[in-house]
Amino acid sequence: MKNIIKKSIVNINYLLSKSRKSKSIFFHDVHSKNEYVKNGDVSTHIEKFANYVSIIKENGFSIVDKIRNLDNEIEISFDDGYFGIFENIDFFITQNISVKIFISPSLFNDKNYMSSNNIKELSKYKNISFGSHSYSHKRLDVFNEKELEHEFIKSKQIIQSLTNQEVNSFCFPLGIFNDKIIDIGLKTGYKNLYSCIPGPYFKLINSSVIRRSIADNVSENYFKNIVYGADYILSKWYQKKHYLK
Ligand SMILES: [Zn+2]
Image 1: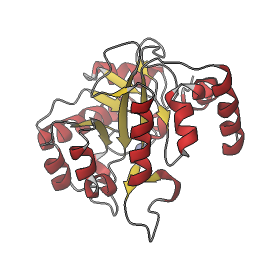
Image 2: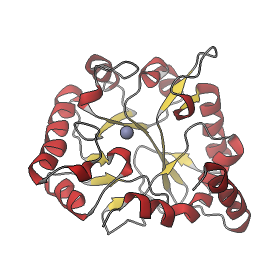
Image 3: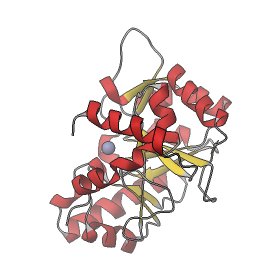
Image 4: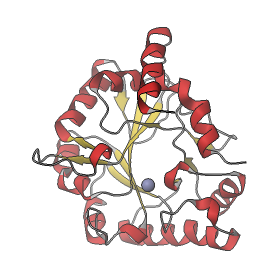
């Protein structure tokens, strides 16, 4: 489905149904330099991100480290561990915004990504937590059982030893998963498995997978739609694309 069509459907749905259910929203990167837009559409200017935070607060939602209540809470995560988060960390610290960063050890030394030292440094902040985004950042349905275990276990070990935090959250690379992947994720000790399928936080998929809404660099108006769950209308479409049978 084309982006513009998806966005129009969500805009219309906002007028029809608004939800105050707690939800998880995710991004990839932020930037603060105007002369270039890093990573094209997947990076949000930090000033725009600050506007998102205001929209959340003005509408009576709060940003939390972990969702505990059915309504009015929003959890924020960043996938892939881009360097822009490290560069703009002061914003998150001074505003006391809790974020969870999903990282893949195979990306640690790539250009535009945080190094293991950067991650170590960020793990000292109380409001920054880390989750695994697999070891290789490859779509997981290509792996056999042994390889899958490696993706889950090895990444967990590396991130735990870097951050001194217990890692029990995982998000699927490219959002792709199936029942075997869910089983191995749970078996290898993860408690929270995150998808890229929008929906209320407590409305789990297959009673184990958490929903999340993507919000990279969207307009402020569209962001408000997401806050009120107008994008839930796309969940069947995302589910068909990401949850493989
Ligand atoms: Zn990713």
